[in-house]
Length: 157
Image (cartoon, rainbow, N blue to C red; front, side, top):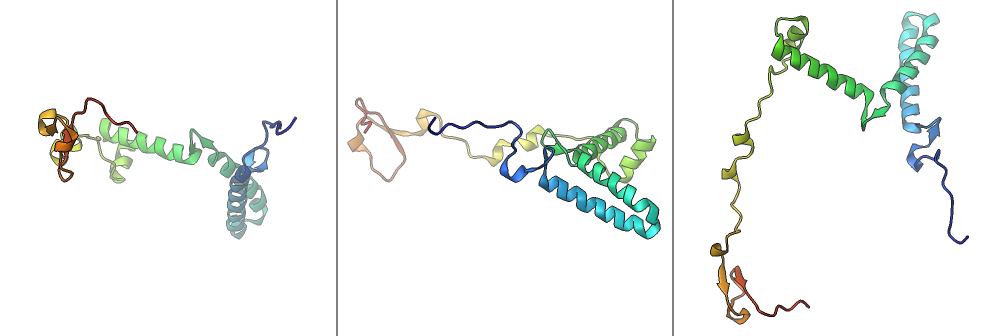
């Protein structure tokens, strides 16, 4: 068996090696976040600092797990942002509508196709054959102008 090898399915990419299928970067972030929470809680209550620190490590691991390419915390933020924008548009006098209005969310998203796809900003492509100067033979062309030359036997080499 020259050059043959078997790969195991539980082997992660090099930069994602960690424990239990969790990348090291997420483990490190969660541990540091739990330590920070434990330190802040220790100022208020020493008895609750270790249990709340361990719980926060688990919460950070859960919220940093990617789902569909985005971490869960970002999906939660986008979900609530959408709820607030929807509430501003449909029920502006409700609790969520007033919160969304206080956060200055727009009541509706308007997409103006004429402004977005304005053809005046773009140069029109030269696709019509009447726009081009055409020659029957290649030797009639001068190399300074853009021209279209037709040849009965094109040189492909």
